[in-house]
Amino acid sequence: MAKDTPNGAATRGRFITFEGGEGAGKSTQIKLLAERLNAGRIRCVLTREPGGSPGAEIIRHMILSGIGSLIGGTEAETLLFAAARDDHVHTVIEPALAQGSWVLCDRFTDSTRAYQGQMGAVAPALLNAMQRVTIGDLKPDLTIILDVPVEIGVKRARLRRGAAEPDRFEAESLEFHRKLREAYRQIAADEPQRCVLIDANAKVKPVAAKVWAAVQKRLLYSKVSAVQHA
Image 1 (cartoon, one colour):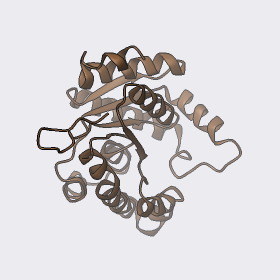
Image 2 (cartoon, one colour):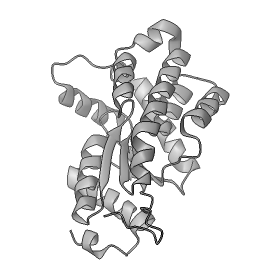
Image 3 (cartoon, one colour):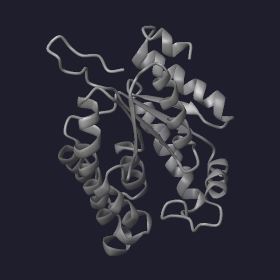
Image 4 (spheres, helix red, strand yellow):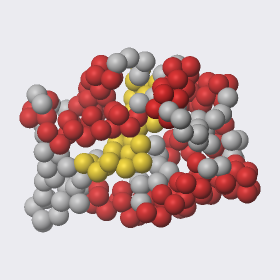
């Protein structure tokens, strides 16, 4: 539960992002973490990118259908991501944090760095400029990067998808996904104060335990005993 400060304002919530390649298990782990936090009376907002707000969800459909890359290549697609993020941050993420809720987000700026920056070769200057405009000083308090071998992740994504057509990114080659995995691992190595790399090549519960341990160590410490023993 969010606590109030002496002047009556709610304590700002925490912002946790989940990153990783296709089939890493981000959505599952976000839900499990939310359940654990809710058990300790910590209010959570679950969201995702691209999407997360009504306007951004419309743009999400355009991105995953491949329209953006067809119209103007990777840079045009990156601009669509920026437009979606701007709406998402200002209508969902920032208001929730200001009200004291913890925000758990499935993908954020690291996905742009990995997919459009490393894989799409979009200039860092453009990515940095868009980031300044869309999120300003907002940064995740913790980023969980779920790491899984490419073949396993792609297989998981295929099983999850069933008979549906693969989206714009799921349809990429194995080599694309291998390079994407390395891009995420590099992000984790470059920013150890913010990022925790977790081996997601395991059953759901052991991975969830590692996620929970990271949240406890980085954000909860030993102060929320009710949550620790949930």
